[in-house]
Image (tube, rainbow, N blue to C red):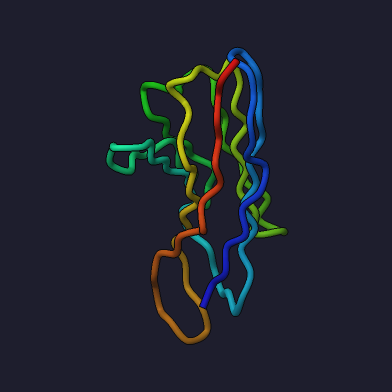
Amino acid sequence: QVQLVESGGGLVQPGGSLRLSCAASGNIVRINAMGWYRQAPGKQRELVATINSGGTTNYADAVKGRFAISRDNAKNTVYLQMNSLTPEDTAVYYCNVAGKTWTVPYATYWGQGTQVTVSS
């Protein structure tokens, strides 16, 4: 199994920045795609950004130019740098990892979620 521990959420004023981190641990053989999703109250969970093992990134239109996803393969960690935050970015942010362990050939895993609130 893979365990994901997220950190970095909190309360920030409009225009501010936050950096989320998600560290994966367990009997990992290989991690493929890593990503961030978010779910605002009353809305469905949506893609924010993904990054594959080669470093190719993909962003939702709503965050392009403001958010940056990156990963540290040595640490099995994915980051989300969020700049120019607006109240519309308020949501619970979830880390998602796809990979292989010694006991499971391929699966996706979710973090517990971290709250991001943008408010003055």
